Length: 446
Image (tube, rainbow, N blue to C red; front, top):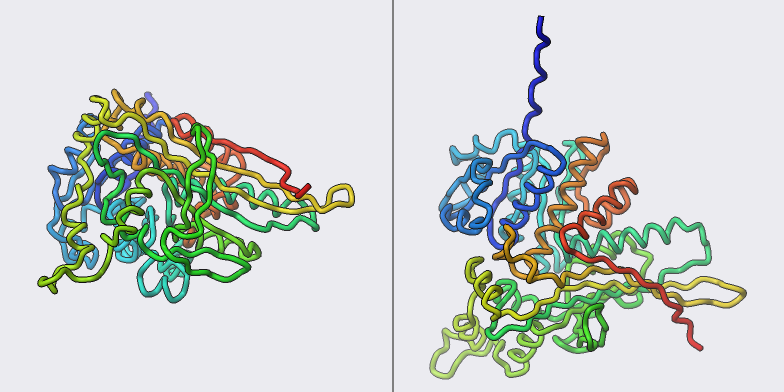
């Protein structure tokens, strides 16, 4: 009598909310990781416009038979349970916010209702609660997710996300070095967003870039949050692959609050950014074109609103590919470098050491001919970074029998995942063309 064949394992279901430049590339990367690891995978994609979502996957149409597209004019009925489409999300293992930070809390509520893990890519740094508490609003769900035995992976991408993971790996190693005299003095993260093109090509929504870069930046200095003027307190930083140093300006970004929460003993933390896109916004700011003042004889229109209205929008994937293929985009480079400064006693002297851990995406032309050809030089590393971190977190739960509960950040993953998973994450980042680098230098004053 023939043995009864073993039933095929149930597919892992990942639901995306929004499918723009980052979401589409993240979906593609997850499908590639699943195929490599022989994990059956299906997707549910919830969007306002299904045709635009399909178009964002114009080089990955082979995946359409694994995707259940749901088009809704408003996500609110889906979140509150009144939309009949809610039934199509039953059984989803992971919910991904690939839309915008305003969906983080509704999606966390939905994750609890469905018993699913949740992934988001960024937080709202400027909402009233975060401004008051200096804590991400997602942490309000920590106890509920722990009680449910589920995890909310927050701020997962390239920066924040992989940056937190790499910094966290090294900081946890230094913490565990058993050197009682070792003191971590500071962590400063430097970001490069540089594109050389014949036209103005925004890698992010220009509205988001204007809001983020024109806000008053903040740094942690001597244990206190300092608020600075925009584009003040500039520094220079030399990135691998760049001939000259790049002017860097303080930036209020997720890593500041996240690292401060995870490593409260480090009293000095800063995030800086620079490159061509930053210099464009700086020029607008210095020309008072981001002013909230109203125009003469037009009290209902501010200078900033006018500039926002006439700036070119973010290009669609097909247009980005055309720019790349035709040579309009000649070169683009995204990089992140974190300098960790610490002191310790060496041969009866106090030695100052600076370790740099970082990443670089400089192979943008290599996306041509791949399913990612319409991605920007920032949306691609953001997407694959999020996909790789999330995939190995899920693998730790599903395959290794591990436990991840509550709200988890990139530096939390660095602490909670075994070394074998951390090594696999690093290998996969390199396999998807994200170069990693590390340096160590003696910074002791002579």
